[in-house]
Amino acid sequence: MGDKDYLVMKDIHKSFSSVSVLKDVSFSVKRGEVHGFLGGNGAGKSTLMNILGGIYSKDKGDIYIDGKAAEIQSPTQAMQNGIAFIHQELKLFSMRSVADNIFMSRLPVKGPLRFIDENKKNLEARRWLSQIELDIDPKTHVEKLSIAEQQMVEIAKALSYESQIIIFDEPTSSLTKKETQTLFRIISKLRDSGTCIIYISHKFEEIFELCDRVTVLRDGKNVGTVKVSETTTDELVRMVIGVKLEQYYPVVPPLETQNVLLKVENFVNRKLKGISFELREGEVLGIFGLVGAGRSELARAMFGLDWLMSGDMFMRGEKVRLNSPKNVMRHGISFLTEDRRGEGLVLSMHVENNLNLPILSNITMPIINYINRSQMKKNTAEAVKKFNIVAKNSRQLTKQLSGGNQQKVVFGKWRLTNPWVFILDEPTRGIDIKAKAEIYEQIVDMSKEGRSSIVISSEAPELLGICHRILVMREGELCGWFTREEATEEKLVKIAMGGG
Image 1 (cartoon, rainbow, N blue to C red):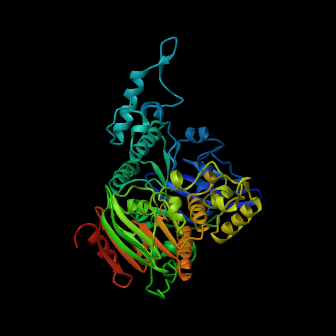
Image 2: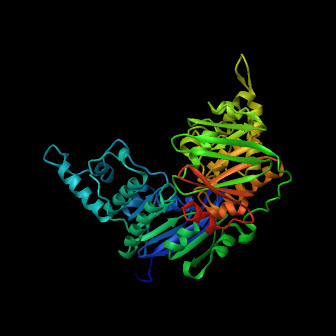
Image 3: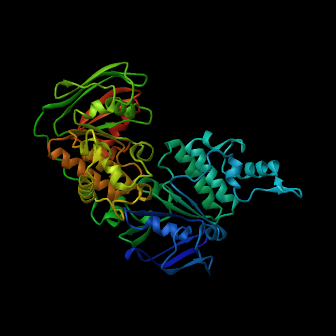
C-alpha cells in the first residue's frame, strides 16, 4: 500500500520497580505492512506490545495512529483505536459458541425486553468467518475446535471490530505446517486490504516468508529496523544476541568413551514399531522426524508415561521398570515434556515451588512431613542463577513469566534432579533465540560432565548444531541414523519423508 506510517510509537519508556524495561523505543508500521518483531527474553517485545494493547501504561512517550495522538490506557481504549491483540495463549471462552466469542460484550438484541437476537448474531458471525475462509457453524462451542480454528475465531473477532492494527504473538507455536500456511494466507489477505500487521516470532523462516520489515529489540532498546529483503539470518542473529551465527551453537566436545549408558530394546505399542537404540556416556543424541513420526510417544514410553505392549530399557545394564515415572527417575532419568504449560509447569504456582516439585521428597522430612524451606530457597537461587531465569523474584507466579523463562524453569527443575539421562522433547519450541542458545549451552555442559541427553526436535539445524548422532523416525519406526560428521539437513528430511 502507501508509504505513510499509520502507527507510530515514539520514545516509549517503561519501568517496573525502578528497573527500566523499555528505554526510549521507537518504531512505525505502514498501512498494508507485515512488521516483524524479534528479540530475546527481557528484550521488551511483550511489554511494548502490551502498552500498545492497553494492558500496560507507558511511563513516557507518544503513540500516533493515522497521524493523530492516541491515548491508550486500557484494552477497551486499544479496541476503540482499532487495535486487536491475538495472544499466544488464546483468550476465548471455551464453553461458549463461536458467535458468542466473536460478539462477547456486544451481543445483538431485539425487542423491548432486549433478548439476544440469535439469528442476527449467528448470521453476522458467519459473515466474518467467511472472510477468513473458516467454514464452521457459528453455534459450535469453541472447546470443540482445533487450536488453528480457535486462532481463526480470534482473527474473525478482530475483524468484527474493524481493527486496523492486528498484533500476532507467536501465532504458529501450536500449529501444523498446513495450518501455518493457511494462517499466512489470511495474514497476506489482511495486508493486501491495508491492515497493519505486527508479527512477533522467534522463527527466522517465518520472518523471511511473511514480513516486509523487522524490528529487533535487545535489553529494552531498538537495535535496528531493517527491510527483510535486504538482510540475512546471520545479521538478524547478530542483532538479537550480539554475536555472529557461528557463535550461536556451543562447541560440542567429542565423546571420551563409547560406554553404553542406556539401552532401549524393541519398544512396541500402538505407535511404536520395534524401536531399539543405544545411548553412550556424555552423548547428545538427536531424534528427528516429521509430525506423527512417534518421537514424543517414544520419549513418553521411556519415562513410564505411555503403555508398552513389549520392550525393555536398561540403565548401566540394570533393567528399568517402565510402569511409572517415579521408577524411571530412580535410575537418574528425567524428562522435559514438549507441553510446558499443560504438563511441564503448574502455572498458578510461583517459580520456587515449580523448581522444587520433582525433588520435594528429597527435601521433606519423613513422618512429620516437614519441608526444608531453606533448602528450597537455596535450590531456587542456584537454579535462577545457573539458568539465567529472569523473574521479579522467586515468588513470582510462573504464568507471568515469558515463554523462554517458563521453559528455563522447566529445564531447571529437572536439572535439579541431577539426571544422568535427560530426555528433552522440543526443548526450544516457542522461545527466543537467546534462550535457545542458553539451553544449548546447558545441554553441552551436561555432556562435558559425562551426562547424556536425548534431544527431540523438528528443527534439523538445531540437532545438527548440538548432537553427536541423530536418529531419524518415520511412522513409528527408526529408519536411519547419522553421525555428526555425516548428517546434513537434506539427508535428515529425505529419510524422514521416506525418500531414503
